[in-house]
Image (cartoon, rainbow, N blue to C red; front, side):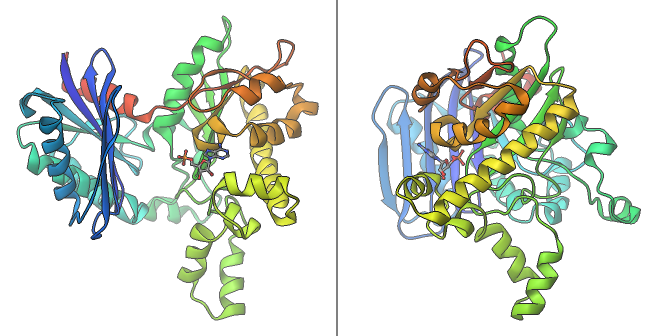
Length: 399
Ligand code: AMP
């Protein structure tokens, strides 16, 4: 059996999972947080054992990777680093170039770098993670798994924006979509709930970032995020779809730069902006139940926007055979799921089973709709890491 690491590097974090492949067995998982700080946190959890956490200075991603590799030996997770046969990296923006995962070569590294203007926060962080692993494991091959790749099957009518054509031709302005690795996983996992001849799925990845995807015959036909992860449904701190005129209007009204306003639309809006309480839906749910009007509005607005996309995708797919909920909110909040489904139940004949909805939380998978619901609704905990590990094995021909 070969060991493969799935990596998700952010600007100040590094998430990892080590798998035994092809058995797809998780050997350990962990996270380095607050990289670049004196009080960074490194945690590693061997499967079936307690988590070990260290708080210390972690200068950069290279130090985090060294800590991980040392921990693998120290906790006897691997006998030798030679057991690691491949590393798969989440790369957020693959542009139009990539419809599949690819082995990272010097050329590919340059292309990922060149795509930075389209994902200024993410691609550089993903590359920093890759370079740190490459330095620490120079003999091992690496694979890039693009968040955008699953959406490459969209038709122009679904991915083009009606802007001057040169925006697209010269500047690559179009809808790319994100969370593709998660939507792919959910569509594959969702197949077991489909009857013969059925193939139309609406996947709702709703966590602190949120996007929906319309999937037919295993292929993405539409998705709610766009050029960046800002549009689509409302999120923890992002607006989702709004009139872009808000930017210039607010800039003129307040004297703030367009960049400042844009940052507020990304970081101070969504659930946080409306509730004024938190970007975490747990706090907002509590606030709503206690009668806080802005928390109530945040929940209703969130639900309405997700429901609007479900309706749109129902039409886009010519019907729907399965609705899937996933990610932090989709997997854990019976409250939010009910608010969303309540908005589509009359038109689509979808009925929630209260008991299953309340009990299908914290990593559980299964139906939350009644037997007579016109469209079955299921919760599937997402697993982007397993897709990264699978792609890494298939591309590097690891057996
Ligand atoms: P993710 O980005 O998928 O990790 O989702 C994280 C978000 O999920 C958190 O910020 C919360 O808003 C939300 N979340 C997690 N657990 C719950 C819960 N039990 N109830 C409501 N929201 C939750």
